[in-house]
Image (tube, rainbow, N blue to C red; front, side, top):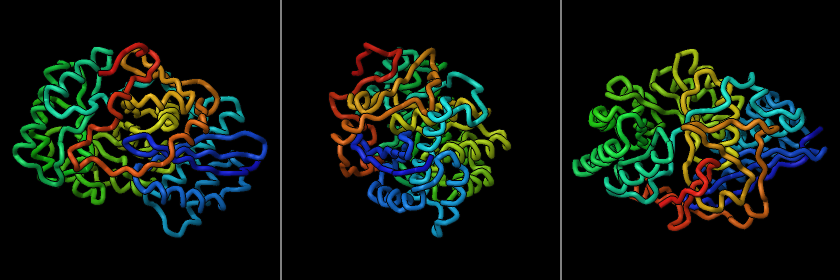
Length: 396
């Protein structure tokens, strides 16, 4: 069996664009991967085209060989574009392998340690701006049985934060904590906004609310800053989603910069690289929570890997999406008692409706994080829960 084609489908997902990778073989088997980059989508398409000539004719089951030789033969190494392209292809190869051997991808990573993973909800706060709006949506969410919530309460802030914005951000966290009670985990996202002194000052304001962690407090281009924050912060620190490959992850971990490690399998190099960097964290007794704010293939892939990782902590998942999500794949996300169940279908257990994907062509999107519109991630009036187990619930 040989690889006969590699295709990329870039589709509009409203707040960003998703990139689905399809690897085909001469025996008719094919696999799906995801490489959603959020920005630089055209560069990603070009990189997939560049890698294609290095991939055609390979045995799709020789995945370590693919990773080693393709990375070796790319003179300019690392970075989000190359590593995302490699990741998307690699994930698709595991999907092919699972179909070929008629087994879920988790089998190849040592088999399951768990058949469900605890989850925290992202995308529960759509269009909230004021503390009372966040509180109402948080209450609505925990009434579904959700036990952990993550969000970014920092508006337009970048590097420093004004006193009024800080007061409002703290008021938002206070309102959510008051609405959901002490038992619900709160995870505070920073999106790499702050300089170290500001991040530490904010951590002190967050400490009374007993947050699980403060995520990516500083830009990821200098991990000394994140390490300094971790040394001085009043709450645990999480980071790692913008690490590209094991060498970059090693830099973050060697600086003792995190309490929770958050690699992203479709930027770090794929599932095998994800397993390797999780083991690097395990050797330091650092829990792992794979970054997962993207599409259905990403979610399917991470569930397979998370089920096999000893130091896995909690699964990030988008609680809501636009109605289009249900039409583009056969995804089945099963929610039960604060957890997401891990599927047992061959491969990743997911297929893509290409016709529907093609009906949502690439649309340029500008990053919203510093515009004050970070919560505008779903179309107005076109947002719903998509989990099995939350059927019939209306998102307001």
